[in-house]
Picture 1 (cartoon, rainbow, N blue to C red):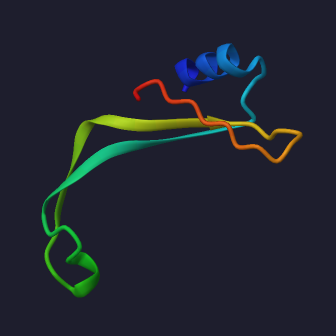
Picture 2 (cartoon, one colour; picture 1 turned 60 degrees about the vertical axis):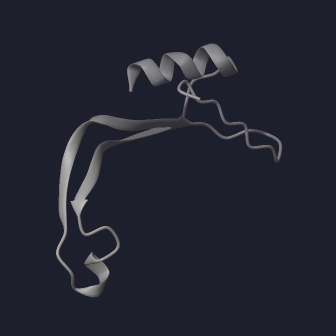
Picture 3 (cartoon, helix red, strand yellow; picture 1 turned 90 degrees about the horizontal axis):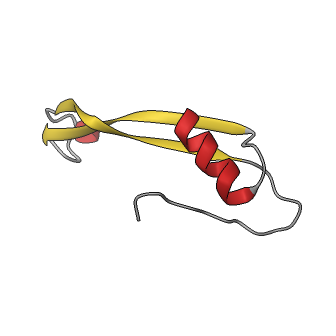
Length: 68
C-alpha cells in the first residue's frame, strides 16, 4: 500500500484518500460452477491487487497502472 500511495502522489501531486488490497487467487477446478452447486478448488498465489484513489473536483476519472 505504501508503494501505491507513493506512486499516486508522484502521478497526481496529491495524497490518496482511500486504498484497498486483495490477494491473488485462481480456481484449479470449478470455474463458474460454485453458484450452480458444483465443486470448486481455489488457491492463493503470490500476486495481488492494490488500488488507491482520491476524489477530483471535475467529472473526470483518471486511471494509472504500473503494470500496463
